[in-house]
Amino acid sequence: MKKFAFLMSAILILSCVSSNSVTETIGGKTVPKDDVVRIANDDIEYEIIIIEPGFNTWLRSIARPEGYYSQNYMESRNILYVQAWNARVLQGFSYDPNLYIMQIDYQPNIDYGYEVNYQLYNYFIYFQLTYNQRLSTFIPRI
Image 1 (cartoon, one colour):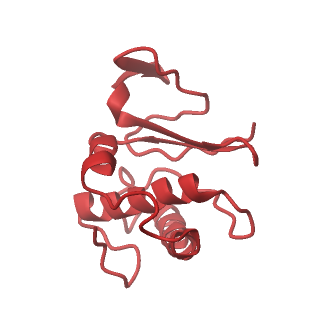
Image 2 (cartoon, rainbow, N blue to C red):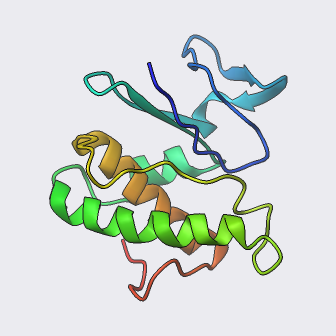
Image 3 (cartoon, rainbow, N blue to C red):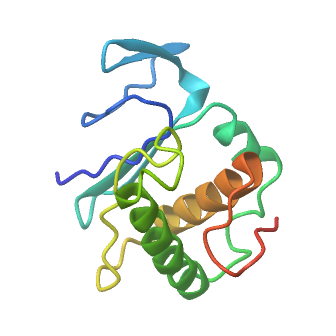
C-alpha cells in the first residue's frame, strides 16, 4: 500500500495505526488514540495519517457531517489548500516550520474517494481555525 503521511505535531508516521488501546506508540512517542486519524482508500492504495490533538473530537462534534459537501467541492478546495501548504513547507523561513512540517502528495488527477477528501478538507478547516492561518482567499468556516 502506498502511503503518504500528513502529520501535525513533530511525529513522523509511515505505518498503520492500530486501534486496540487508549494510546498509540508512533515513532517512539506515545500519542492519545483520539489524536490519531487514519484515512485510507484501499482501492487506490493511499493512506493519510493525521496526528493532531483535538482534531478527531472537532471532526465528530463541530465539522459539517459527511454528505454536506460534494466530493467535487472538497477536491477543488483541497487542491488549493495543498498547494498553499506545500509552498509554506518550502518557505520555512517565512512560516512556522513547526506548523508546516512536511509536504502533502495530493495529486489532482487521482480520485481519492469521498472519505479521504472529506477528512483532509476538514483538517484544513480545523488547522486554519485553530492556528489562525489562511491557506487561501476563502475564509475557513464550519
